[in-house]
Image (cartoon, rainbow, N blue to C red; front, side, top):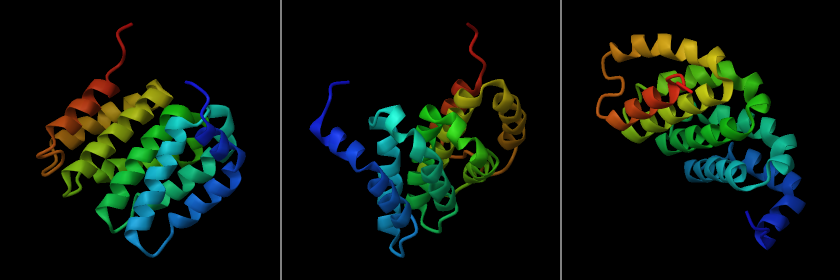
Length: 171
């Protein structure tokens, strides 16, 4: 990636930016919480890994709280952001992993299809990040989930993402 004045400015002020997003993840307004989640994911996706690494654990802790939000757009945004953090900062996410996995599984039964798809993508990110340690549990749980009522119903894309990304790589 090419250096960007915008990215450089965010990196220079990153402690304040992260602190602000973490605080906004607890805001009263659900739209503000959703935006905080989406912005946290964008940091993970666009900033240099070395710059965000010291802040990744505080971001994933805030996102973990948002995964249980009453507002479905907040839950969806938190799942998406968690997947981005898992893809780039697996060691920093490890402390939250049990809570993340529990919540992602719960959200596979959410009544909102896009939340189910985001949860499936987040589970797949966990499988990529932690390999066989997580993949074995996910495959075992997937067998149970596939027989549960309402789970992944209406979300064939969620199932495709989960199965494709959780299956061991033949290479």
